[in-house]
Length: 408
Image (cartoon, rainbow, N blue to C red; front, side, top):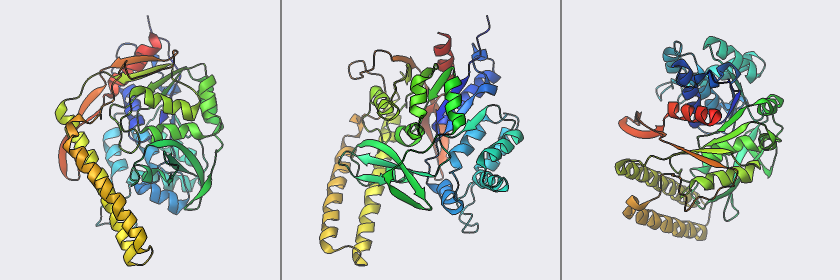
């Protein structure tokens, strides 16, 4: 018997959301068991607009537009497989340092999106429709809001970090207590929290959905920001849809250090006002060599952040922007952080970096069910000229899990 087609809404951003989209597209293409459950034409994607780093951030500031990077990744993930190879190379092409200074580091896809939006008087939705026709994209891409905002994090000590790109790179690595939005006035972030109006189409899509899939992706900078627009969390809470959260495979430095599965769910509840009906969690343990590689790279990144922050304090002191007392305080704080990092490196094999469902530690709402799967895929990438194997979500396994949940 053929499965009933469902209207699915996917919510997220970054590199995590496209994994689910590619999985749905491939699952349907291969006509795997229950593929009729996924109606690609009725698929709606709600993509975060909090990215302010790299090419996206530069274009956002220079042209007063929403950041195009996460949108670009979703467009590629939904593109027809026959058109994808050449278009993927074009969309992901980055101009190197030999290019004109204004082009260096920019993605060709980001530039195309911004250019098309300008042709339509700044209307990004019409630019999406143009690209969707070229790439034979099925489904609909929306945003939580069209208002210009800045993502901010409030840390455990009450201090505020402004800007999505600064949250993971902050020198104060105390845990995140919450995230919120402020207005973006030109290139500056306002100081007061702000709740932007949601896109009416987004609220309508949530209300009409049969299933809502959140994640995977950076919890506080890709998933939760979508819930901060007015009415989005409430719409999900009152939707008739099955609410599904795809938990990350690994913890993320500066965001979810030492988080278990239920810690991720608790953050969604705090910010969105609802709990998922089902949590899809990975059950496969990762080889120790990958865990050591991941933990080592993570600590090296944290060391680089501390080092850059200290160098900035020294520069400011030399230019008399801060006094000697402030510099001494900075040096003391950074010395403590470097000592902590050294201790972490010595005990690196004991670090908790993989997220696995632990019945003894996880504490869920009675209405939430955990659906465990082998969600791991080993992917070979080139990073800074070095080829290495990394752990990612298996996109088809995620699609199969969603199908099983909906048909179960």
